[in-house]
Image 1 (cartoon, one colour):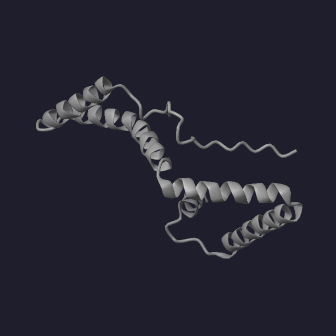
Image 2 (spheres, one colour; image 1 turned 30 degrees about the horizontal axis):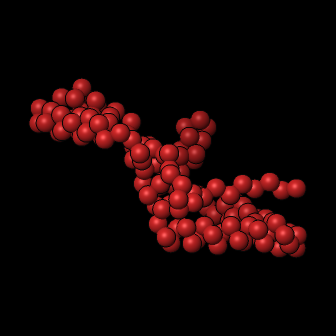
Image 3 (tube, helix red, strand yellow; image 1 turned 180 degrees about the horizontal axis):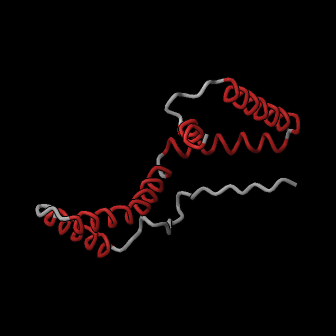
Length: 134
C-alpha cells in the first residue's frame, strides 16, 4: 500500500555511475586545468572567467564521484541497512508510523513557532527592502 523503493548497490554489481569515466577524459581535464593554471600568470578577465566556467562545469561531476565513493564505504552501508530496517518497521507497524508522523508534525510546529517568535536582525534583507519601499 505504501511503495518505498530501496536502492543500494550490491557488492558484486558494477556501478555505471559518473565515476567510471574514460581515463582519456580525465587526462583531458587535467590538461585543461594545467592550461588554465599556466594562463593565470597573465591575469586577464577572459582567462579567469573561462577557468571559472570550467571549474563550475566539473563541480557536479566531482560531487557525484565523491558521493559514489562515500556510498561504497562500509560504515555508510551499515547505516543504510539500519535505516532500511527502521523503514520496514514503520511499514509493518502502523502505530510506529503514526508516532513518526506525530513527531515530524511536532518538530515542524516548534520550528514554525520559533520562527514566529524570533526577532529578525537589523541587517535582515526583508527589513531593508521594506524600509526602501515604505
